[in-house]
Length: 135
Image 1 (tube, rainbow, N blue to C red):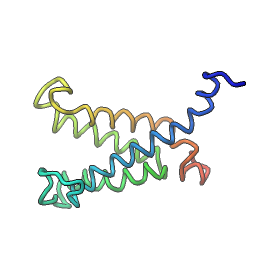
Image 2 (image 1 turned 60 degrees about the vertical axis):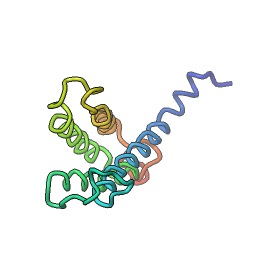
Image 3 (image 1 turned 30 degrees about the vertical axis):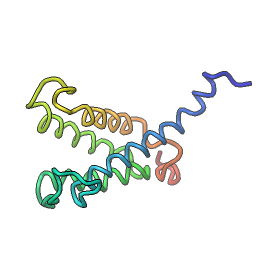
C-alpha cells in the first residue's frame, strides 16, 4: 500500500495542472471584467479602451489566461503574465502603501509568482502542451 508521501508525489504533476487551470480561469475573469463588465464591477462599467494600458492588460488577461487554462504555450505566456503582474503591482498598488495587505496588491503578487512558477515548471500532464509533447 502506498504511503501518503508516495501518493502526494504521484499526484504532484496533476495538481500542477489543476493549479494552472484554476489560475488561468481566474485570470480570464479579470479580462472579462474589463471588456464585458462581467462579473459586474463599477470600475469597468463603461468598458476600457482597447488601445490603452488597461486595454492591453485586459487582452493579456483574456487571451493569456485562456492559454494558461488550456496549457498552451504555457512557459512563454506565463513569463509574460508574470511581468504584467509585476508592472500592475508597482504601478497600481505599491504607490499607495508599502504593505500589500493595505494596498490591495496581494492578488497581483500571488498571480506574479504563480506565473513565474509555471514559467519554470511548465503546464503539467493535463495540458495542450503535454499533448503536443512540449510540456
